[in-house]
Image 1: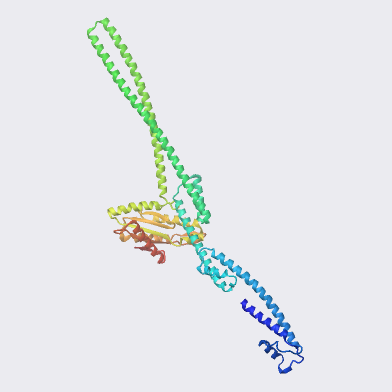
Image 2: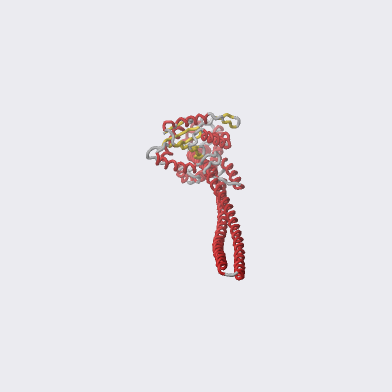
Length: 491
C-alpha cells in the first residue's frame, strides 16, 4: 500500500512540474484548445513543447491546490512510513514473544523469517498472527485446566492418605490443619510445601514410634535379665538349701541312731555324758535348721519380688500389644466415615477370594458412587461434602447385613463385599439401599438437597481374579452412570 502511495505522489509531482512549465497565455481560448487542451498535453507528456503568454488564473489556482495536496500527501507518506516501521517492529516483538510460549503453533514459526526481513511489511501477517495468538491462548488455557485437574486429583489423593494417619498431639493438629488447606486446593508451590510437611510429619511419627518401641524393648530386656539373674540365684540357693537339709537330716538321723546304740550298751553315768553330747549336736543341728528356714524365707521373698515384676511386665506388654492392635485397627479404618478403608478392602478381598476358591460360596463385589458429588463440594463447601459422605457411609452399613464388608474405596466411591449371597437376590438389598439414600433429607445452607448413588455389581465367576472381578463391577458402574445415574446395573 505504501508503495502505491509513493507512486501516486511521484505522478502528482510530475504533474505539478509540468504545470509550472506551461507558458502563460493572454487568451484562454487561443488556438481553440483552452485549458482542456493543456491538460491533455500535460498527461501526454507534451506540456513543455508549447510556448506562449501568461497562465490563466484557473490554472494558477489549480496548480496551487495541487501543490498543497501534494505536500499533504508527502507528509502522510512520511507518517505512514514511520507508523509502518513501528508496527512491523511491534508485530515482530509480539511474534517473538509468542514463539517463546509453550506449544506454539508451527504456523507462527514459518512467519518469523518473513517478519525479520526489513522490507517485508507486516500488515498482511496481522491476521495469521492473531490466529496464532488465539491458538496459543487456547493451548495455554488447556494446559491450565489440565494443571488444575492434576492439582485437584493430587489434593484428593493426599486427603485419602491423611485419612489413614492417626497422630495425636501437635502432629495431629497440624495434620488436621493441612487437611483443611488441601480441601481448598492451594497453588502448586503451596501444595509442594504441604506435601513436604506431611512427609516430615510421617517421618517424625515413625521416628517417635520407633523410639518408644526401642525404650520399651530396652526395659523389657533389662527386666528379663534381672529375672534371669534372680532365677539363677534362686535356683542355686534352692539347691544349696536342699543339700544342706539333706545333710542335716542325715546328721540328725545319725545322732539319734547313735543315741539309741549308746543307750543299749552304756551305764548310767556314761549314758548321761553321751546323751549330753548328742543333745548338744542336735541343738546345733536345730540351730542350723533355723538358719536354713531363714534362707528359705529370703528365697521366697525374692521369688515373690520376681513374680511381682513379672506381672508388671506382663501388664506393660499387654498394654503395648493393645496399643499396637489399636493402631493397626486404626490404619484399616477411614478417618472420615469410620468404615474400613482401601487397605482393609485389599486385605479382605484377597482373603474372601481365597475362601471363594476353596469353597465356591457366592461372592458379590459392589461399587457405589455418589452422583454429582463435585457439585455438592462446589455449591455448599467441603464440610457439606464430608457430612454427606459420613451419612451415606452409615446408611450403607446399617442397611446391609452384618456379614457384608463395607469400605470406602476413595473419594465418593464405596465398595461392598457381599459374602455367601443368593445370586438371585443380589439386586433386592442394593435396590432398597439406593432408594433409602435417595430419600435421605439432606439440607445444606437451608436448601433441601437430594443425593443419589449409582451402583455397579458383579458376582465372581469361574476363572475370575480379583482384578477382573473389580474391573467388571467398575464397568457396570460406568454403565449405570451413563444410563442416567441413580440406578443399579448388575453384570
